[in-house]
Image (cartoon, rainbow, N blue to C red; front, side, top):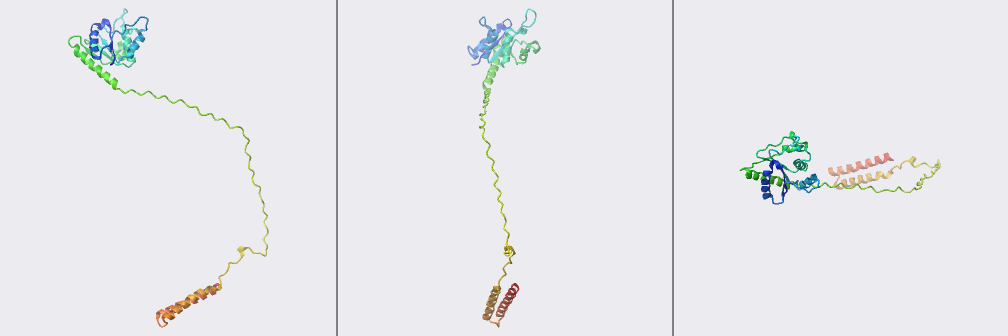
Length: 267
């Protein structure tokens, strides 16, 4: 269950804050609504006490009556005193981002930002809830409790940001020891140049490039003569009296003549 803290000034709204406390405790449960947090043991720092109480607070309800700001002996507002309990309670809740609901009793007015200390000026812009001390008291309290339930449901449903992952510690690179001093590698020597003395070519022996190319032999005429003779014989077998025979015999004679002429030119 949530924790609700009521901030009020006794001489301003103590007469109705008890009724508000009873309604809130009936809804949120006993031990979850706190008022009079200024009742602390003597000797303790009351600022640290307020810090500890508000560390467990989910909503701060600031009850505002007609004399909420208060007046000091010098005529200044009690809120101008840095040790004022009401100022410390609201100031601490605002710093902790705790929802602060102003409860205006019998149409009391919200304080102006210019009338508040610098640390409380954002309180002047909080949406307030009206509470009537007469016959509309329970209706106004029902509306206030519904609004508080909505605030608490949003706080529960709000996703919690994951904690940032710490960056890995830098790893020092491994220390590489320099290699021991070694003698420089031997320089390779160029191989010795071998000079070969060319022998003179005898004049009597002609080089291969100057030799004449072999000439074709005279037997080259034998192939066309054989082919021509074949066609002449074929023409005789067909018959020299026929056109086919004459043509075959004439072609064979022509081949023989051409072969002989070519062989004679090459020879």
